[in-house]
Amino acid sequence: MNAPDPRVPSADTAAAAPYPTATAAARPAARPARGRRAGWWTVTALAFLTALFTARYLTLDPEVFLDQQRAVYLAHRGSLVLHVGGGVLAILLGPWQFLPRLRARRPGLHRLTGRLYLLAVLAAGTGGLLMAPRGLVGPVAPIGFTGLAVLLLLSSALAWRAARRRDILRHRAWAVRSFALIMAAATLRIWLPVMDLAGVPFDQAYATAAWTCWLINLVVAEHVIARLPGLPPAARTGRVPAAPPAG
Image (cartoon, rainbow, N blue to C red; front, top):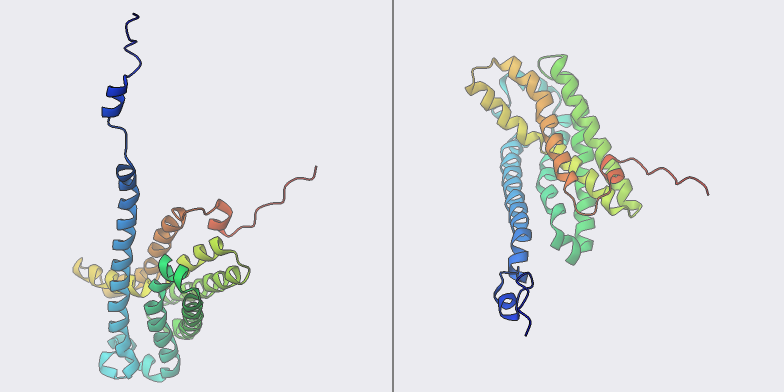
């Protein structure tokens, strides 16, 4: 009888070998899912707190306004309500647009909240464009906030256009950018106290916040977009793929 080849595992050895089971294979996939859920809850909580803090401005009570901007806010209440009201609604609706189960099970609700989000963004962006030139620490801060308003309106319009064309992957990419820009309201309210604790003068902190509050968010958004499943490079950048050569 021939001796068994030691390089070939026997039936008993094969049965006992630690091959990955379906449960073990699912564990690595479960970790990113838990991370996404934790990230969603964190962003949603931050959005809610920002909306709660900012909504005070809708009372038009001068005592809640920034001291340096009190006169400007009182003189342009219409633009202020448009900007703050739209921003509060958009930041509250935004997180729910990124729930896969809601999109799959209630597509009609997803479309409805998406339309409301776009209307809110239109109000927030328009009010922002009206208020930005009257901002503090000119011209640095006003230019920064104007850029934020323009990019918010542009990214939201591109998300809407992609949805109309049933280009779902590109729609998701632009929707992520749009919400990242809305969340600049939260980043701004984190940046200013941190700069104050660091001893940075208010004018300098405010001027940098007008840019960092949305530039940081866009960097994070591009990282999220790069990890979206099934998203080709052209959809991430918004470019349309070139036509293949003839022949």
